[in-house]
Image 1 (cartoon, rainbow, N blue to C red):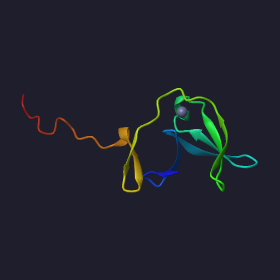
Image 2 (cartoon, rainbow, N blue to C red):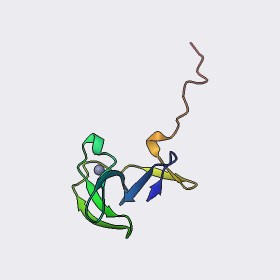
Image 3 (cartoon, rainbow, N blue to C red):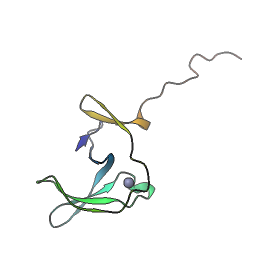
Image 4 (cartoon, rainbow, N blue to C red):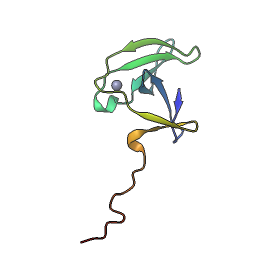
Length: 92
Ligand SMILES: [Zn+2]
């Protein structure tokens, strides 16, 4: 389980992140790949009490997202603030 800056919690397995889907199964809760919105079919069923994965289905159709850790938080690389290249460009 990893924690993001915005207090969201994600599950990280083999570099892929999952968010809670909420659908309860008999022994656990379904978590979907964070890239589900982009069409990734991968999902797991996790028993949160035991911390074990009961079921893993689907294959990721993308590369794992890149995260870096800052203090206790994980930050996705493409969410990092970018400094504008044009700040000091006043020439014409
Ligand atoms: Zn995926």
